[in-house]
Amino acid sequence: MKRKTRSGGVALITAMLITAITGSLAAGLAWDNALDVRRTMVLLFHEQGMQVALGAESWIQNILRDDGIDSETDHLGELWASELPGLPVDNDSVQGAVTGTIEDMQGRFNVNNLIGSDGKVDEDVLQQFRRLLVILELDPRFAGIAADWIDADQDAGFPDGAEDSIYTGLTPPYRTFNRSLVNVTELAALEGMDKASFDVLLPHVAALPGRSQINVNTATPAVLRSLDENLDAGAIEDLLSLREEGGFPDYVETFSTLLQPEMLEQIVDKSSFFQLKAVVQIDTVRVTYYSLLLRSPNGGPVTTILRSLGTI
Image (cartoon, rainbow, N blue to C red; front, side, top):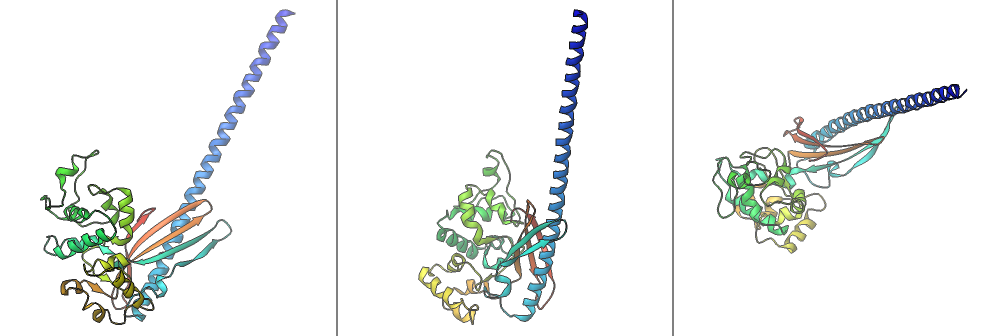
């Protein structure tokens, strides 16, 4: 009887262990399956968000093309300059929304202008960048350091400059780019540039291909003020009031007495480069999409020259 009782107890324990192991395996398989389903849905929502963002980009291209045909100037009172209203993304499978903004990138300082067509540093543009940094209460040394970052040689500028000899001594080491910037975020790699300084500088700078002029109708107040050392806060306030309705009536006449001739050549009232920021929310998936657009003159096509996700 004792032997039978002992055998029955072992069998019961074995059965309980098998049941526990089977239950654990089933729970693990169910959890893995739920994760796989969720991963698949996230990938699906992300892809749908990308398609919505591309659709928004195509819509904005049409708006900019029509604006180029209908308007001889670009200013902050135009349709493209207003924030895009939230548009619903709603069908049988998904729900969400898309919002966005368009910014005239020629309202910013183009860092690639630091290097002239001869491959050398443009001193007038370098001085303007220094003024911009001072206005923003940042270290003016960054102007010379940025010029060294994109010029083709390895000769450090004097008194401000930094080439490979500086960057290869950092941890981790890296080298200067020695060519025009592709993305303005590359400025974060400059010697001495911290996140706080970069965040202050970012809304006022751009990295446009080649050399470009500044649109005074859309330029930030700091960029406007950097055009000449004699422009103070009071003068900028008057200029902003003058352009408030629909841009400057005659920008050449307005600035001819305020700027030096070499800087007067650096300004315009119509732009070619615009940036779209589209934010698409599908279920719990959020897609932040940036698109740099080039508008051809005289009603030509609007083409995309740079796309990025999550960051500029």
